[in-house]
Length: 491
Length: 113
View 1 (cartoon, rainbow over the protein chains, first blue to last red):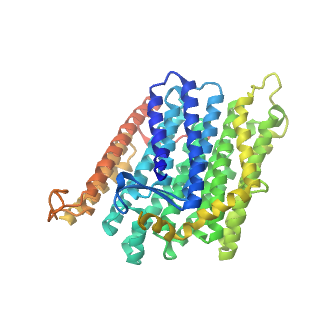
View 2: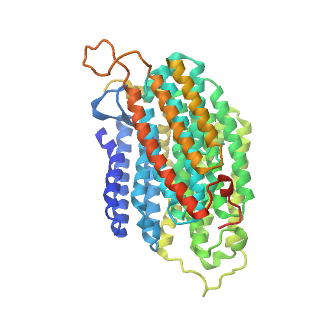
View 3: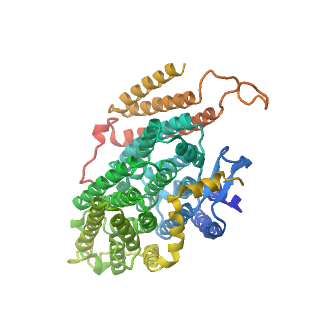
């Protein structure tokens, strides 16, 4: 059964390669890729049940038993993230498929999204640290191309910065792997965890852990987020939705995996992460409040969310980790929705600053109320999905006595609420400046994916009871022995 | 032997960082290329140098060398090749669009769409 894990990576790549040859038929491309991603989503649901009954699944490629060879490991945490990734991709692809034809579709958009998915899912599944690097690169190379697609001048400029910063961070990743291999002599993550635990607190390993912290912080946008707002706000709607929802989460996942499994001892690293998360929360909030460009506001909201998640990791008790996992799932849907909404607003008005728009609620009521839902959801107001995660993280912070982080987390929620309500009140309320004759029509089909996403965030908020057992199972991250036994404890 | 290679890695890294910090696009790209060479050497050194002979000479071989770093480097070289090819094309497109290859002229302002 565990052999089917390979499908998550192989099928998107194979279908993507085949679709390259069908460049002239966008219909076929769109429905084929949506079909593939939906099928994988079904498989993911099935495997989630399997993991629940049988424990962690493992696939050793070529029959090499761990610690030799490359392997895929599926636990509840990675499967939850995979399912969310696939669902967000389905909706983003629907948004493209249902809207009027875009030029970028002709330039291999669908194959690239499939490759991007293969890289993201590979990073979630892999149990080998070098393979993690490779999957990161698969994801990054697709994102390099996606960020330049769309024919906007600014994209090229921002892409140059994005690519350069990512090359440097990938270099740090390789340096980290080289020193780790030199000191513990293995690449299997469970085996590394064992060896690191045996070696106690070797100073070299502390340095390596700081290198990894730097790498994943660059990818996730933890403190080192300066590249993020520019590149996420220059791309076309659907690309920024995919990036904002999915890419930083891979960095967050890597931080969670590495710092719960491998470098989980000592108090130095949690303190470090806590300081970085606090500064990220402050910086992100300032950015979100300061800008009037709605794309920049949305991009800074991504930064705040990353700060919040890593605050959860640094608090590190069961409540906080459960809350953070809830929050990651919620944030992927909510950020996709936010970026799609912002993109739709820009498409409808051709304006990007909040002062230039007004009274859109009269023109497009459904769009306006969907935006209001995402505001509530991101600010963490019940019954929407953001509430549960924030509540648990705050409870965890209280239990742990991390009052500074607690205050920052709550203040950042207010900054999120303020920055987004400012968009809502400026752009949707007020005097209508577009008359009914002049307004650009908003097709129902273009609105449908947005409403579906808003429905998902409401459903996730109301259906906490359904998701909770899985999230609790995923929070077993805190006990690395489960993972290590599943990988190294025989077949 | 290892120490000499490590010093070489250090020299390559400092050259690369010098190039990365310059303002010319092509120099930055050359910097990333040298950076990747430096880390490949580092990985190779981490596997140990001059301690053995050809890997995988049958089960009873007395001396052999760790083959894993070489496999890692091969993968990393392919990846850095792809990335360098891409960034060169990107730099060319940026030059076409903006008519400049200096990073400080590519800062952008807040008012543009």
